[in-house]
Amino acid sequence: MNERIIIAVDIDYFFAQCEEVRRPEIQGKPVVICVYSGRTELSGVVSTSNYVARALGVESGIPISAAKRRLSNTDAVFLSVDQEYYKLVSDRIMGAVHSFSEYFEQVSIDEAFLDVTNATHRDYESAIEIGRKIKDQIKDLEKLTCSVGIARNKLLAKMAADSQKPDGLSVLHPDEISVFLDPLPIGKLPGVGPKTEKRMKELGIETISTLAHFDPGILADEFGRNLGPQLARLAQGLDDEPVREREPEQFSRIVTLKRDATSFNFENELRSMTGDISRRLRSSNSKCKVVGIIVITTNLKTKHRARTLDVSIDSEQEIFAVTSELFKSYFESENSKTQARRVGIRVSNLVSSERQESVSNLSEFF
Ligand code: DCP
Ligand code: CA
Ligand code: CA
Image (cartoon, rainbow, N blue to C red; front, top):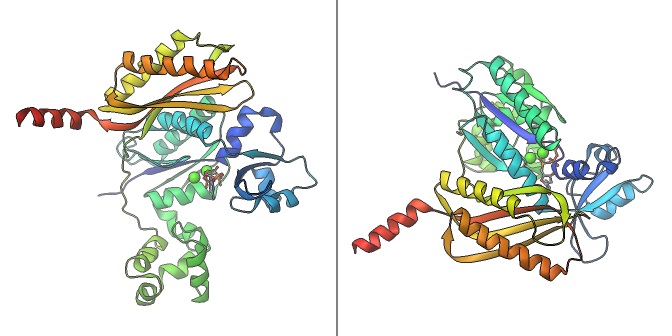
């Protein structure tokens, strides 16, 4: 028997919710996160928006000018994306979610899957328990809501999570799958983008049920020999993709200072962060080539400095040496104009320390 239980976690209106948390005064207003192209003052697109703005027709992908028009009579807040900040929040959340199962896969900045088949002994009630705990923990840690879906594979878990947003917990028992899937419009099927959707509608395919039973030959002709049959399988709720651990690309830590700083006077905090990062590198058998610092100022600007090293490192002392220098030169260059409220460090360009060793062993051998 290879029946699995998969949990999907997706943070609600992620970038916009991050901003609501760090700027509580904007809660309740329409919040629009913008990617400004810089060409003219208003050119660019909406990255995401909160649910207040969505109810007024403002969602991902529309031009900022259209969003401004639709929200012209409201107290809407337009903010520029701060990708670095969302990444820090995401790293902390993903760390917490990962702790619920060793079978963990992060698929995007705000989304992850867990395989809890063994942990739950294939019992949905105990999977729901884990789902609740994950939601509670993300709420406690970051004050963010997320939506959780539980089902027999990644596809259905994701669709279940999407079906109850925001702050949902949706379970799809194996015997409920076709009742759930069949009536849904094909646009709800992951993998069916706007172009595919349009062509399917021209072929008379409106619902997932129609797609599931459609002539496989025609689907192959229309959408390709691989994609066509694949879409039909998805429409039947079939998906064998395993939850696949991906190598982390970076590690970061950030702390709020007890007192806002205008110089490097937080050696203890830095030691604790470098110790933590060094342990994380070693436990994943990695070393880093790039070491950076993060400063979040009292007026919520996120600043970065990073150094690329000649030799990759993983020790606490080495990481401390580089980051303390970066902090010193940061505060010198800033001329103490801005105050730091939160400070962090980040290591990236990770390389496997095992591979390095074996390479050096080999070169010794030759
Ligand atoms: N994103 C983006 N541009 C897009 C889609 C998404 O910049 N076209 C960014 C902003 C989102 C984040 O990625 O906050 C996560 O994307 P989601 O699709 O999960 O959307 P949200 O989390 O914003 O909303 P939802 O509550 O629907 O999950
Ligand atoms: Ca999301
Ligand atoms: Ca997502």
